Image 1 (spheres, rainbow, N blue to C red):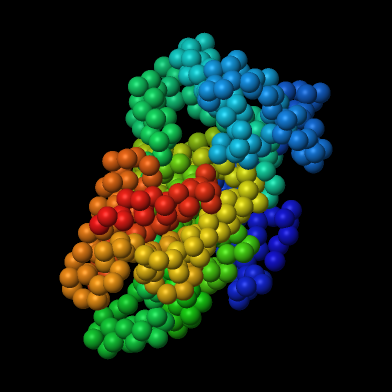
Image 2: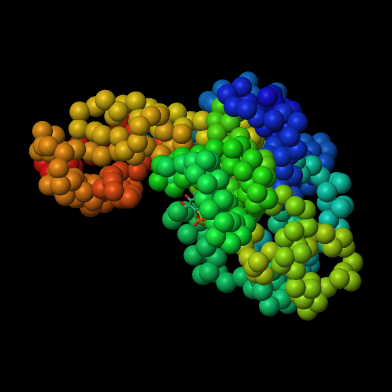
Length: 482
Ligand SMILES: Cc1ncc(COP(=O)(O)O)c(C=O)c1O
């Protein structure tokens, strides 16, 4: 097992059967992350602030208590409208921002500073006397600055610096002299709408290996050619993890492509406690992973990772010389456009990179462990509580807790069709009432022969034990008369 400070978590853990030397998950994911973008370190601080003003080392900053970090605010109404406090970001981390306790001032101040950076950039973008691009060769940027994603979090000062630096080297796509058919121009209302949607962030049975093998053999006997097995690490409704190691063995035996849909479960790789649930993912040919789910990256941010180097290029490249010229003056390996299905796209990975810089791997780990712990808390609280029935036996593997709330009027009824017909209406009515009151919201759905049940999924970093208690009380308050 890796220790914090030795880089991204090594695969395999005390709880699972991970292969320590496997060149798979940890390395592959780490490489993927590194390729997304990088970090900006002390050299860049020196460049932008001058050597004398470099922030002190993170370790020296951590002894300050929160009162020293953030000046006290005496306003009674929060968020308050007091003057922007004199906050020293060199002593602050993303954990000091909301939903942190008393995080309002720091959050307002931080977001105002981000806004200032963005507004200055917007205004400058339209100034013809400024450069369209402050061009530096990609390898120069890589050599001169530290782009690493570390286990430890960066300070908010460094995060703001990352924002400034990114904009400093980015193409000013709104500049009147930037001519491109895909991403040119900067519409103010469109920008406002983009900020708005990002701010609102409007966003889980298992595979039986013996059954899989039987079906492959049957298909082959009928003359079909099975070529892909799509396993799931964290199913949408139940949050179940397919047995990836056994599936990998079968895929290898029959030479079948192994894909793992880790859209929902991939985030658990950040946790040394829970990553064993994905053991075997390192043997997949391809993996999908949505940081916009469990990791809380604002919508949208999805990754497709493929094992074979060069595969995306060979499948998707169109050699469209009118788009991807081969005689540019910089290293063309940085032109990734020809590898992808899409041509024009949003730089979704920047959100993940900046969040990773700010939280460090340990921060993401804590966030994910907390969600799993809250799900266990909910499960323990309702599994033997009067009026609740669990949809599947045993402790949930992910944060999906699936249950029926059975109102008092149904509790003594025989388990027959009439009871089923009444039970299926319970969750929709409670959900509708939740929405009308606006107090809380939780998903429900039927699955197979199981009538409507609640599916609680916890990926919201702001949720606490009190919020789980509230949910239970609210379900009972809104459903007791049904
Ligand atoms: C296991 C799994 N795969 C894929 C998806 C699709 O996710 P998206 O549309 O956000 O990419 C979901 C959505 O919930 C999911 O749970």
